Length: 116
Length: 115
Image (cartoon, helix red, strand yellow):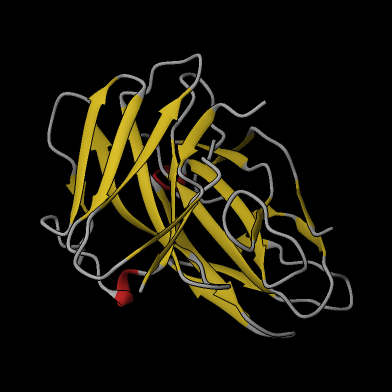
């Protein structure tokens, strides 16, 4: 079945540091890839997505590129802020099996802590 | 095992009727629960945040009179789709944060089909 693997946290960085959260996947077919973010006390929000190979999703200074050759969708940001502290989930949709939601398979989440 | 139980898993109803979906936290108290909607192979969209003892907070564009949320107790939140129409057919899923843990816990979701 489909699966998503992401680095486990917590990941602690200083403000203005460069961020990379790794995400790799296994899936049949041609899935769409997503990054979701959950801020403290809030619900899950879509951060960015990419629907085909070599697509780059971007939002709020975050970027991720759909790399089919390495089956990866790593999340990056050039300069993080304290307000970026949250849990980040990598997910795929359109593969062969569903996960926590219909047709969506989630990674376990990476807890990011940004210190001033 | 599952920490969030959602019921029913599938429901088919006729246009104009109302459908209630339950979300229960098992073995922990959830002062907050989240309700999402998902169209096939698309991303989850947050609909509303359910708060025990107070009114739910709805996301922009979500009709609060159409999607009634009641957080009846510290372990139960319900979503009622009122006067359902075929365009309400979708996959609805709830989640509840486990106190002291950053990870997500989803219910198994409800597939609603309105005919």
